[in-house]
Image (cartoon, rainbow, N blue to C red; front, side, top):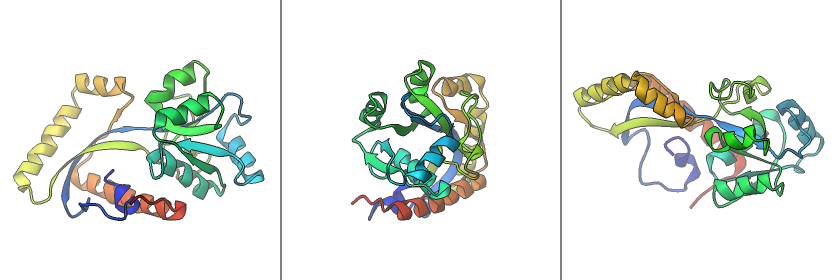
Length: 227
């Protein structure tokens, strides 16, 4: 939300940089590109070769215009120099249902939401969106192994309102780092498919600014816009 909305919406009532103070990253959840088992491609390289041979022929489903799984597809289009056609749905559940039913061949979805389907053979995983393989599914390649530099995860972080006293933000940051070092909390996050992120407020701010710039380019290239 903080990284994508500024470029996606024509007008939003806040500025993620000016109005908020980054405190700490908390966790990240990768998305994974899955295809129906009937789809011929068994790997990212095969999918890219097929898409290059037939631009605008193959389709990918998403939870809607401007959603992360839409923009992940558009980023793949841009970075792999292909053109997959976007099919927006009203939510990830109907999008995934149509991939399961082979009405649409592929979609990006959060790894926890489709891992059971992958293990059951109901969909085939081609690659995770994280920069490296997920510890929760190490057999699934990272898309970046085929498309260098590809990376786009859902992440969660802690922010304070801009202007919060520095001693308060420092205490919040220290408290969060202590909490994230707790094995019980880490295990609970892992049970939801979330990998702990750690970093200073400065590192978190750099990450946020980098993501805002990255997604702004993808939104512009895709033409996605929400009123």
